[in-house]
Length: 392
Ligand SMILES: [Fe+2]
Image 1 (tube, rainbow, N blue to C red):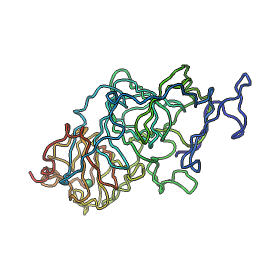
Image 2: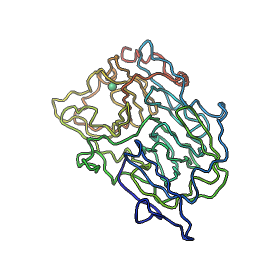
Image 3: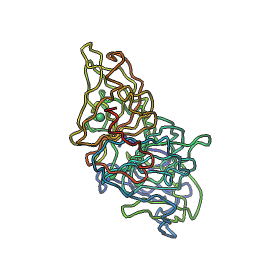
Image 4: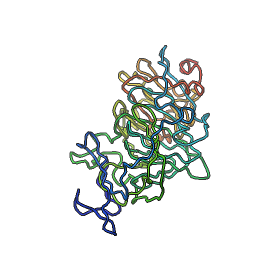
């Protein structure tokens, strides 16, 4: 997606010969989406990126399944999970715990203490929401320093690794897609610039700053493919890019830079949208003024998601509409299509009207258009009887 950028040493003319300081030609690589008919980036390597000395399949015990085994949500239930109970030791790859998934997305949670292997996802873009901690995302296009509250979009087939800060693990919600994560098309002009009514803007995006050169030979890279994990031993370190340009690169957006759209009466969920991807939409609820007309309803409506399953990750705040439900920081709920839900009794049975007040909550919502099934690992962190939390 975002907008065109260039970094490092690049030629004046696209697809022209590009020698290094010694006169030796650099190796150009195009990473292009949709059969090279959409966004792309063009990288200039010191070494041919196709030099591979070994290909192996990783031992299954060392990694979670490339696609988790899933259990249908049958009988249909709303679900509640507690990511605060997750503490699997490892990296963003091997400590990634799947919770929900379907053919379009897998929603996981990772608690990363250690640097990840060099890795790329050849199935789809990955979207992280960093809940706690900080990390440096190192990529073949450069590094981005990531902090809590950042969304991080890592495009398909961009080789990278996560390096958590030394003092605290990084805890992150992870959405693996089967396509590309983009801003909603309605936020952009026909030429791709964010429109003035969009809730965030180019200035809010953190982009890789300059190439990241690393030396090394016989370097392992883990690849998530449509048929499982594969490991390559590359003759040279993949971070050997002296320059690149294009619109296909990783970037970060902090949730605090999302300017909420509010109104005198209820505004529907699309005003909270941040990203779209095949089969899903990502929204967030951020600190904002609640509906401010004195006649406004004091609590949100009960509702049915007619065409989507609704996943909400409760990141910060006291979640007014969930009072009495047991939902707390780090909880993740699933409200599936076919189940009517809404504010919990603690929100509508007592307390002063919230009309015109502020809410300080931060929550990330992932709506999927195909039904979500449960990963086996999710059962260990599920709260029983969430379906009755509106009743008791
Ligand atoms: Fe809902």
